[in-house]
Length: 133
Length: 133
Image 1 (cartoon, rainbow over the protein chains, first blue to last red):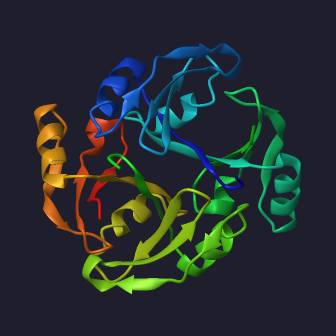
Image 2 (cartoon, rainbow over the protein chains, first blue to last red):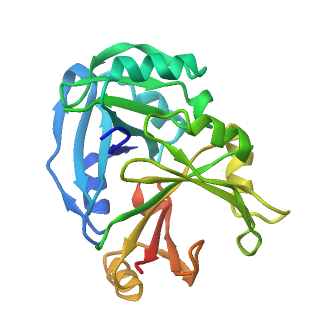
C-alpha cells in the first residue's frame, strides 16, 4: 500500500529506560533490543494498535543518531518512515517535484532498500521511504 | 482500539507551503486548511494510506505551537496522538506508572477530550491522548 506508515523513529539516550517508558502507553507491546552494527544503532520496536515506534540509540562512535542526541540530549522524534510500492519511481517522482532525495537507496533495518528525504523540503521533518515487501 | 494512531502533528511556519510539500509524498491526500481559534492554531490534515499528518501553524498571539517554532523555525514533528478507549482510566494508569499527565482533559481538535503527557517521561516526545469516538 503506497504511503503505509512503517514506523515513527524516536532517538533515545538509554534504550532500556525508553522501553520501560513506552510500554506504559495503553495498548503498547514492547519488543526486545537488538544491535544493528552495520547501521551504527541499537533498536527496539514498540508496537501500538496500528503503528510502530522504533526506539533508536547510538551504537559505536559514528552513529547516525549521535548528532541528533547531542542537540537533543533527552531524545525526540527523529524521523517518520513510509513504505512505497516502487522506491526508484518514488524517488524520481519526488525529485521531479523538487524534493531532495539524500543519497542512493541502501538496505534499511529490515534489509529492504530505504532512502531519506531532505528535512528542509518537509518542514523540518526527516522522512524515510522504504521499499514495500 | 486502544493505542490507535490518531495523527502525527507537524508544526510548520507556512501552512500553504507545507500542504504543497506534503502532498508530494506517494499516496498523500491533502485536505484544506481551517482555523481553530479556540486552540490558537490553523490546521490541515494530510491523509496517508493508514495514518494522518496534522500540519499545524500558529493562529493569534498566544499559540501553543509558537514556542516550538521559535526554537525550530523550519518546523518539525511536534507530537504524536494516540486514541484511548477511556481517557480518564488511561490517565490514572499512566500516573500510577509515573508518567506525568499535563493538566486536565479538554476538548481537542475533533471536540473529544484530549490530554498531553510530559515529554520528559517519553524521551523528549510530546504525546497526546485522545478519547476514542
